[in-house]
Amino acid sequence: MTPPKVLFVDTAHPILTEELTRMGYQCDYFADYSRTDYLRIIHQYFGIIIRGKIKLDAEMLSAASNLKFIGRVGAGMENIDVAYAETMGIACLNAPEGNRDAVGEHAVGMLLMLMNRLRIADREVRQGIWLREENRGTEIKGKTVAIIGYGNMGGAFARVLKGFDVRVIAYDKYKTNYSDDYVCESDMQTIFEEADILSLHLPLTPETLFLVDEAYLKKFRKPIYLINTARGRNVKTADLVQQLKAGKVLGAALDVLEYEKLSFESLDQQSLPEDFNWLIHSDQVVLSPHIAGWTHESNYKLAMTIVEKVTRLFGEKAQ
View 1 (cartoon, rainbow, N blue to C red):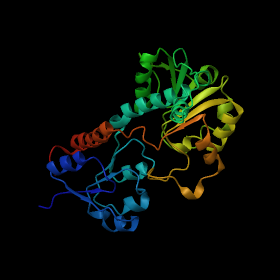
View 2: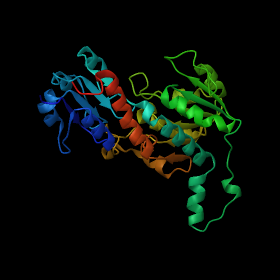
View 3: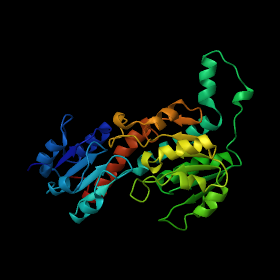
View 4: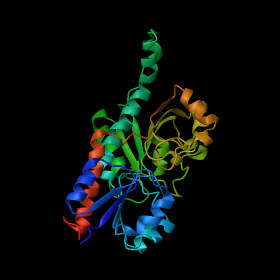
């Protein structure tokens, strides 16, 4: 009997291929395939493993007549038409449990780098410049940190903050009664009034697209530091730059940018405006290339999370 096949659209940690093969699946990966190629062959597959190379939209899913699961090796599901997939009986699996710890640590690391002027000081010392007073830092201790979106990533960030003796408050539109040892459930009005540091942990949806714009930032009573390890288009970059210049935002730690391509593997070089040029030259900004959840450990854990979820749905052996 021909084993059920799993199509790898994107690469993943080798353990994912090894485990699915051990379970009896045939795993295929075609590095040079385009969307047209996938449309031609997708009907052959029981499962798909994807990060962000292509969109699994209604057209693609309609061609996937034998598909039973989609495994997103990551957290965000914006490149998958989940609602349509579910009408077809396709299970949509993601793996936020796999990289949440990495995101929490990276967010704190970027914040420390920003508030302690480490990027600036490091550059100066390498040039033989020794400025102490000019590089006096600001402590996290005693600040109020506000988290928007209290899921896997927001929760991990709150846990990492536990040792800093800060007050952590969070708002999540779709959750209630989640106060615990790490966070106090809050509302947006309290966050606007009391936050010193704002950290975004949101999916990208029509509701969260450019959520953080000029009007949003101006609602904060105090100047804030902003951290975004979620999705670039949660923040309107032009408005952020404006508020950095105005002093409403003291500094920004950005692991993600509005200008990323769908795959997150590169920037859209055709649409980089002057605001991007300002960001990369500003000492008020710390940047990284969408790697908050991109550790050696998370690479493995993301893969194993998908393995565990496939096993729970379909058993230890492919049917």
